[in-house]
Length: 408
Image (cartoon, rainbow, N blue to C red):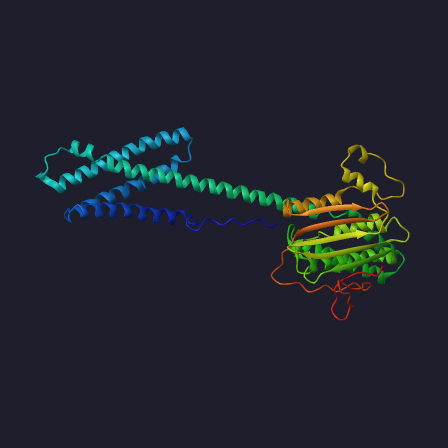
């Protein structure tokens, strides 16, 4: 199952490295600022040693605070903020006490101040530094927690989307597989081994194509047509001349990317509702055009129309409960709903899905999606044995084909 990969922000890819980089940069900047201020006020160079000791003290105390805060940040908010205030208070007092003692040693008897006076006078600096450090520690960790939760939510959404796409991909009509296996069984019973073997080979090729592609993956239109041809080759063995196809594909559209197995359910619907009910069969046409930055796909048939399918499209529960017309295939509504949901999952609102049924018969499905190309254009798939190839300019099989299908 394809899952969206979430990349960490480069700076915070390693929290440990980011912490030490911020520690060194922050306390280094604090030392530099105080040193420049002292030199600008024409203080002696000896004072730099005092500033360095004070900075190292703050650096060391912040390391202890980081260990404590790492435990507190996992607690309830009231416990976290309450204990943080208490711990910060003792840290500030400890920092100021060390500064007061160091200044007492540095100045000796040149200043007539008591330890308590120095302590009170120096409280503002560690309060500012350690208070700001604590605020930044919690702010950065809160940001990283929110970012991690957002990434986790995005992963879950991606997994849910992939799971839904997988479910939709695997909703292939079991009737097709049943009918194919039943036809193979009949051929075997009639000892027609060669046609049975040919149908089995085509079925295995089609199933291999459907299982190789990951759910939710994108394939080129050329690959999609190749898979569709395998499916049509199987159906032609069942319906023979009743199934007529014609594909018109722009050269530019061959490399267009689209969700895997997007067209097969549409063609299967056309076979079920147009070819199967009529003795003369029907013609199924697939057209692909690149119009600006859009890929337009059209699947149409010459069947009698699908009144039962229209019940589903009308979304009328009363209509759907009505008995089907005798002799007509019953619509479950799964095929078109499947395609509609897959397009919504893949493109959101940036797609068009329309169905039309003319009064005189026939059914058309129109799809427009954003036109995107793969890394390399795919080769044009070979036509089926019964196929004729043509495009905007109809060209025979040799030279290279442009469109795929059987003559109407």
